[in-house]
Image (cartoon, rainbow, N blue to C red; front, side, top):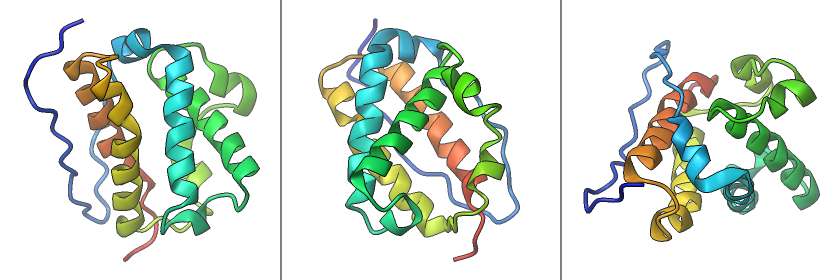
Length: 154
């Protein structure tokens, strides 16, 4: 694993209504380096932050339901990073735009979502559990993927 002094770029692509840029999956090495257990811990941190955030109303209301949503998201991210197809086995094909359609996701909610994900990634970065290139690849995926989820104007 290579961890350089190069800074990670957590800039956020601006939202443009109707734009759906191509999504590139994260490097599979990200999951290989952090492992499934840490991916699940990442999503647990993230969903805990969501539960306390200004966008919590678009997520399940109880901490138990948030934990379940985090487990489902972990299955998705493990799969999208080249791991076992847990999401498909438990929920069917991802079809994430369709699955998120019932929830009002604004460009502002997307920004909150991304900022909270960046915070949840910090232990992986600080503990150098993955290379910067692979963390950047994961961030780039989140950044573009989140553009596709916006379904409600500001």
